[in-house]
Image (cartoon, rainbow, N blue to C red; front, side, top):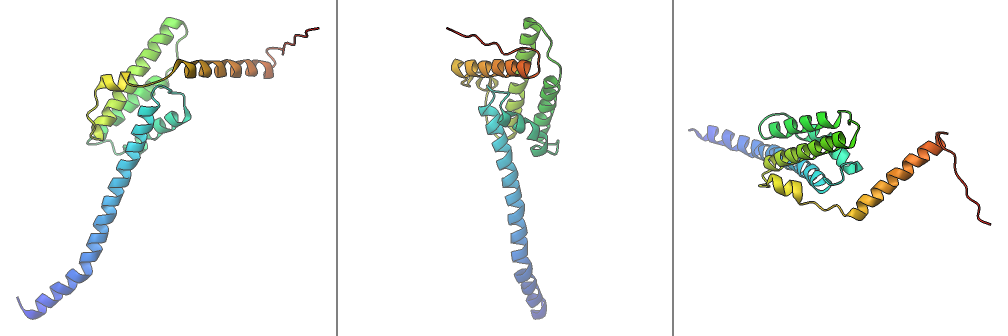
Length: 171
């Protein structure tokens, strides 16, 4: 190798080296940021699995296809489980306590499947039973949610003109 050739290679290395390092750093930053967003979604869904009507839970569900795109590699199981779960959620709930309970039981099984797939794709070794059983939803919170729903339904009836406001006067 001639002296001139060695100088040229040195100059190219001096110029290209930092640019290549900067490019590699940006690629790594994008990968880290994507993983961070996936983990945030998983965290929200796992911590709100007992309250599926919460706004944070619904928003996280709607972001799954965006954050776990493209549907390949570790993302396949997540996207497939999400689509099955979403399909179930979008089915009309059947009337009657038995049919409603069957729909809800199926919903719970499907979200466990989806969270399990998310855990696997993110490198967590969670068991399905842990996802299914290890959540806390106090009965007081459930009572409060039911009372709020009853109040909203009553308000809709009154303001919709279907029910009068009843007044009782004590003398």
